Length: 193
Image (cartoon, rainbow, N blue to C red; front, side, top):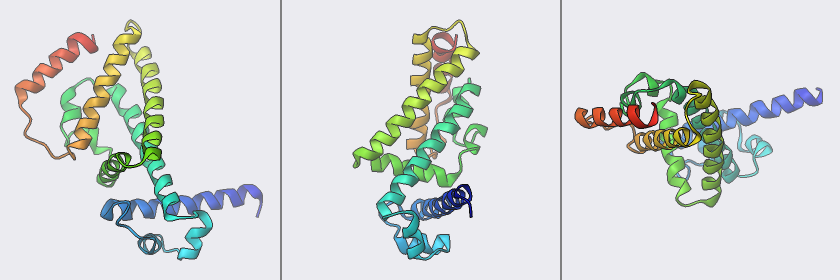
């Protein structure tokens, strides 16, 4: 087996383990799922898992990196397309259908972990900084007449909005329509105009 093939095999095994860990963590949380759970879910023995990750903590860290990166990529793909706050606020909209329920649970678990763990906060902050830069570029292309301040305000508002929806656990369907219309007017006049 060539070095390239060996590296690819290792990467595939690590992804298999992370995928299994995501399933376990979405059911039981980062601290509730055990290595035995991950072993069962991945169909790999504990010894095999330890060949690719030195500890459960390393699996948790790599899983969090994956979740944070996937969240960034999801937002980067979908936020530049959205102009309606209703699509973002409505947890049943097409916007959120592309973010699987398992990933929603894991994102909330990640936010919770960030409250306790500096390393997790740093992972999230790094991905958010990348997202801000990428969104700024996307919005500059989409709205070339907008100023850097307007783009920054728009990005800040959108990120607060999606984080708020994520933290509501995608369950609040009783939004006041007048308030939603008011927010849409503000966005149209001040952020998107």
